[in-house]
Image (tube, rainbow, N blue to C red):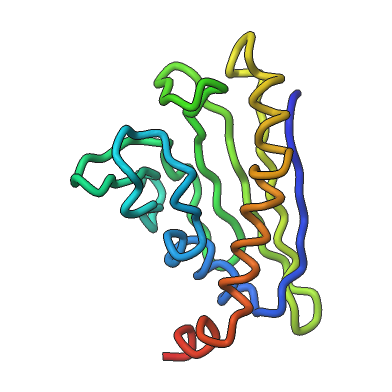
Length: 159
């Protein structure tokens, strides 16, 4: 099985960590990371099993990325990933992304596993290398941590 696994520990409760990853996904997802033609206006994870994971362009158009397989706050989230190494949507190819949130004292260990990448066919290794390198999951988790741990995020979470 071809996969990428990354772990970070954040200064937040599992509830806060899960909420920022899912409900505030758009706050930390970079505008450069989109597959639709227009510039990215919003990145969305619908908060329910069977929900959509997609982008909305500045022109209002929508482009699917995958769907929500499991939505279990504050413990885990599982998404399908239908984006190939050509950075286009492929309905017939789906790897999975599981994100788990485990309490460690006052902090939370966030583990992201992008698995079943081999399902993307002959360019699977290229996709694995891209999502595991700079600009991929390591960078994205850093952006997520920055939003989660910023003082403004903490204040917003308490509202």
